[in-house]
Length: 280
Ligand code: URA
Image 1 (cartoon, protein in one colour):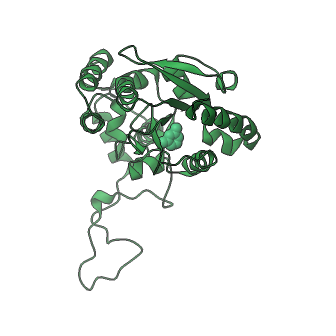
Image 2 (cartoon, rainbow, N blue to C red):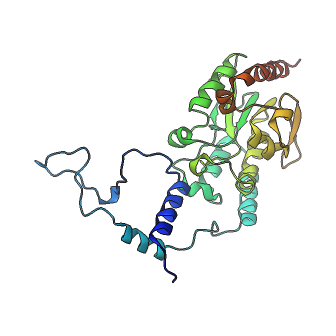
Image 3 (cartoon, rainbow, N blue to C red):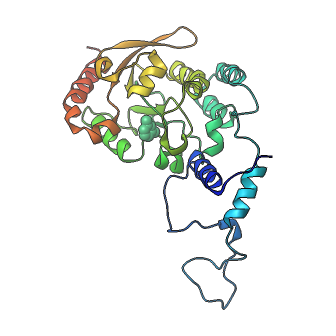
């Protein structure tokens, strides 16, 4: 096996951490929690549990990196097989509950390995409005629910402005059900693997309108790029079975947090959505 320099080993370790979703520091130096033991009775408590064993040395890390299998390419089954498995699993579901169980049991999306939770939906099943965003972030991964972080709070306020809430008349989901590492944009393949479940969710819940929040779900659901031009224009999502559902693209609330100037146009989109839902 070829020699790995200390710099390469450190870089590989950092890359691996990022891929596993470690994107923030909680202490000035890394802690190996597998090497921690709870303090024994009478043992003075330091600012964490008592440590057992020495801290890992870079040399050990280097050996581990050299011995590690090559980065996964990325899963045991091919993406084609994963898409076919997702199609079969989704088609077999004849209720929302069956679909939720099928998504949670699905092992074909490589993102699942790095996520804490499957994030499927939140809100009122059977509502006439379905909101579809991009993918879970950190807060969503921790809580297992879509749109619960800052962007989600803004989304809730936007929906409340047209009389909509998760508890009464809105269902919320994403085109991806597992958090991508470091919140990167999901790849086309990851999106393709989740798509059969998204289609089945739309078919089973039969919303009167789908609000597409952001450019990534716009691309995933309609094959259209460029949210700036596409927002505010009604289109139709065609699902796997050929059913069609009215869909309105709008800005993602995370974009609006960064660019509050976009709220005027987002408000126009919400009003158009409200009219559609009222049947006008
Ligand atoms: N952004 C999304 O697109 N979805 C979430 O669930 C959270 C943030």
